[in-house]
Image (cartoon, rainbow, N blue to C red; front, top):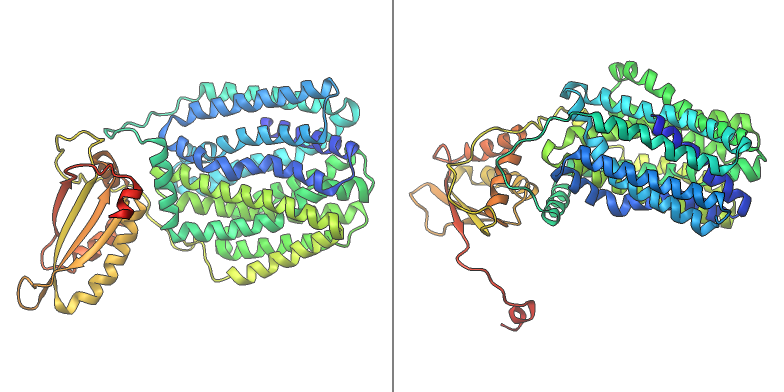
Length: 516
């Protein structure tokens, strides 16, 4: 929380310094684009890294990077070398550290609290962030007003020291496994494949990303509104920014009681409507007081929506892919924020910031109407993402890098169950590919094994023996329910299973294969 206060102090310093250099809404909004664009590019790689290395060490590296970037910013400011390009570049460098840090930070919540407290842990984490959002801008306004922007950047650099000390002392329990370590590129592919075949996660990405695209208007254009339209000084500007965090903290206090009375998806829709109402107020405001009240409402809505989406991600995916799923979520969030900031900055430059606020508010309401039927499933129906501790088969004397591996399963199905079996296998396919299979197919034997029976053969390909073993360990209790449903339709209790190792590797070029 202390470090986040320093980040918001720096944010006030950056935007105030940019406002002194230029009156362009577009250049002002590009600071927000610079700080969030790395989320689009690096959050997914950051999630993959966080799933395959010690998260504590990764957090130490990213926090040290951000300390150095903030210190460099303070030095450049002290030497009077700051230009709009340098401001945007330095915000980009800080964003790189934040993008690599965020998946590991958020994925650490389940390491610190039991499963039934994850929602509360996420809310507490968000509360700490939003207390910083309330205090940091006000403090930043005072620091910039009394001492100048250089000291705001220096204060942010110092604030990272506390996080480094705490992380150094965190005795995280080591994760032990007899599986070979995942490779970075393979881990990235599996994370993307999981997202592609996990509809519950896709709903959260769509709703969260759409909300951030329209809601990011506040962070992109509020400095222009406050400094050039309302003619506020640095202290008043900081206090106005702090209203967003104050509203978020207020929401944190009331959310637990509201969650007991209303469903999470109902609260999500209500928070979106409240945020859109705040945007519509900002489109006509010409006085600091109504602007501050609108920002209180927007802050409460922002916290409610993003904490709900974050909790949904945490509960929708198993532990082995959690950081990667959060990386995808943060990528979508960062892309929506960066793209939205640039887009709404352009709208503000062309037609005025009040038109931008009005259009974003209307757009948010239209998006809500279009996605109202898409419920966040993990919050609507509890899902068991705990690992299924079933040993797949006896260990084989194979090197983990041997492969590819073709797994063949043979089913004998009564004729009357054919349609039900094919429906069940669609879900099996989704699980196989989601958990790492690079190819899947289902064939029916032309010659029936016995009268009244059909023979089906399922095949799925794993890139290596080690990846095949990891697929078994990735299966959750919910996945096993899918397999049991398909297996239960057969004549035998379980299908007959074989594992085939590729006899040789095809090194022909793509051109050779095309010319065959």
